Image (cartoon, rainbow, N blue to C red; front, side):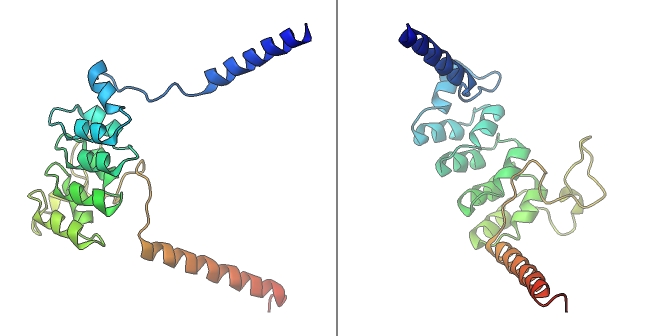
Length: 195
């Protein structure tokens, strides 16, 4: 009897644990079963193939932009149907992804302007060669449009707040040195009694 009770309790806990686990990736609206099956395939080259497809829906490209495989994100970065906000986010990824973003003629001018100052020469060259790169006299193309679609008068932030922050190595080193400087200054102050 005790064993039966424990088994039933164990099954109940197991079912609760299974219910608490996420059901898997959420399919964007309007994506067919066949296309979704390819987009979540275990093989990264299949997912990259979906992202390279010139008819891939923008909402699926947005989903694939978070893929763990660089090849998939590279394909998303190079697809002209990739939404501007997604290109903006990918512009902060590793250089292998930033290069295709800089080459993509759909990349917004304000993102190209930032990529023109990238630490990697290949990314800067791709941004410079992009036909969407604003000229020195055309400052209206640089400003990120506001929510209403008009060019904002104030300088836009480099990237939107939903983009992940990624620091370049010199920024990381500077932040670490600054932190240690403050730490040792305060430590010295504590040890000497504030003198």
